[in-house]
Length: 427
Image (cartoon, rainbow, N blue to C red):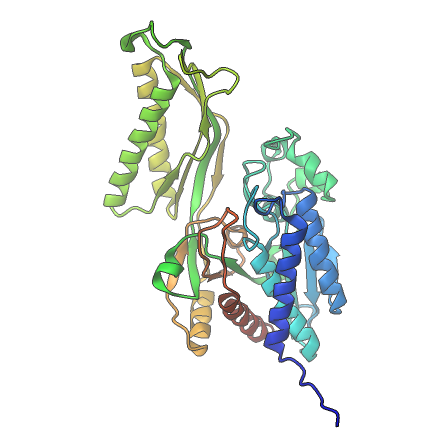
C-alpha cells in the first residue's frame, strides 16, 4: 500500500528557504568570529550572487542595476504603474551578525517566491532590491548604495578612503561593477517616480522589542546623525615624571575631559525632552609611540551624535565645537577635525505606518510603533520623496556583533506582514 506525502504548506516552504539562505550566508561569509561582508568587497558580492542564484532557480527575473545592486522583479500587468519596492542591504560590519540587512532581502525573496509559485499576477510590479554599501564601517559614509541610486554621493564621498586598504570608494565601486561615471556626475540611477513605496524588514538593533516582549513592530522614523571619523587631539609628548600638571599638554586627559563634558550636555538635553544618543566608538594613541612613562602628545578618536531632530543635532554639534575650543585653550592642545559626515533624520510615511499597524492587528499581534535609533536605507528612499515604511523584527543581543539572535518564529511573522502588504498594494 502506497502513501502520498502531503506537500509542505507555503509558510513551511518559505521558512525552509529562509533557514537555508541564512545558513549558507553564514557559512560563506563567516570570518571565524562573526560575519564579514565588506561593502563593495568580496563577501558582499558573494552574498548577492547567492541570493540571485536562488531567485533564478525560482523562476524570478534578476538583473544588476547601474549601482551594481541586485534587483529581483515580478512584473505587473500594468507596466505604466510605479512598482512596489522592498529589500535591504547585504553588507555587514567587520565581525558582525548574520541577520543585519540580510533579513530584509530574504524576507522579500520569500514573498516574491510565494507569488511566483501561486501564479499571483500583480497589477503593479514588485521589485526586490539587495542593496550594496549600507554600512559606514568601511568608508565612514553610510547608505552608499542607496545614495548612489538618487545621485547623492559627492566627490568627497567618492574619494573617501577604505578604512583598511586606503583605496578610494570610487575605485572599490568600479571594481564591483558600479557605473561610477554616472555616479560621479550626480546622475540619478533610479527615478523616484517609478517607485510607489519602499518597504523594508530589518532586525531591531536595540533591546526595545525584547524588553517589551514584542515579536515585530512598525517603525515611525529613523534618527539622523553627525559624525567625525577621525578627530586628532594634538598636544605635546613628554616624560611622565618630569612635567608637572600645569605645564602638561596631555592629549589623553584633554580628550577625556571633552568626552566627559559632552556626556553632561547629553544628559541635560535628555532632561529637556530632546532625542539624542552620543558615542565615541574609536579612541586611542599611536601604538608605535605610546608607553607607560610617556605623556601622550597625540590621540585620535571618533564622535557620533544621533537624533530624530536636526535642530537637536546642530545644537549638540555647536556645544561640541565650543568645548573643543575651550578645552584646547585650557590644556594647550588642538582638536583637528576631519570631514564632518551627515545623515538627515527621516520620517516614515504615516499612511504606510497605519496600514502596517492594521496588518499586525489583523494577524492578532500588538501594533505598538517605535522609532529606529539605527540608520537604514529606508531613510534615503524617504528623503527621495518615496513613501517608505519599516517592519522591525525582535532580535536579542543587539547588532553589529556576532551574537545577533533573531528567532525564526519572529522573522516569519515579519515576513508574513511584508507578504500581505506587498500583495495588497500591488493587486
